Length: 198
Ligand code: GLN
Image 1: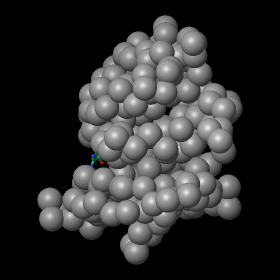
Image 2: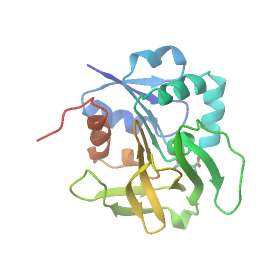
Image 3: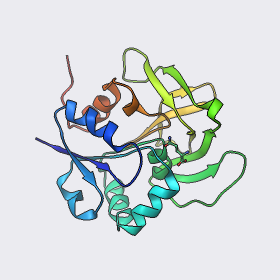
C-alpha cells in the first residue's frame, strides 16, 4: 500500500487523512523530516500560513519539502497550503513580506475572500472533472499565475482558485471539507498514484 503524507503541524489534517484512507492509501502525518522518504505525495492543509511556516522552519521541514517540490514530487496545497507553495504572497489591501516555499509561479493574495461574509460555497467547473465540484472557501486566497508554466484548472468571477504547475497543485478552497473525493483522486491519478476509474 502506498503512503501519502499530510503535513500535520496545524490545520485541517484529519479531513485530508479521512479521504486518503477511503481511497486506500496509508496516511503518514508529517511532523518531522525523517518520514518524508516513505511517502509518494504530500498534502499541505488549510490553517494559517504564517503559523504553518513558522512550525515548518522550527521542525526543519521547510528545506526538505522545498527540495522535493523542485524535484517533481507531487504536492497539493489547499488554502493556507496553497499560500505556502506560492512564489509571492500579498495580503488583501496591502503589500506584505511573507516567506513561503517559493515553488509555484503564483502570487497568492491572502485573505482575498477574507471577511466572514466572504466565506462562501460555490459550485465550480474544474478541468478534468465531468460535473461541478462544491468549493468551500474560508478566508481564502486568490491565486494569480505569474508564468506560462501555470495551468488554471478552475476560476470564480474574481479569478483563479485551482492551479496546477506540473507536480504542484494549489486550491484556494477546501476539497477535504466535502465528502467528494474527486479532486483528491484527480491529483493522485495525474501524479501516477491511482489508476483512473472507468
Ligand atoms: N487565510 C489563511 C492564510 O492565509 C488561510 C485560511 C485557510 O486555510 N482556510 O493563512
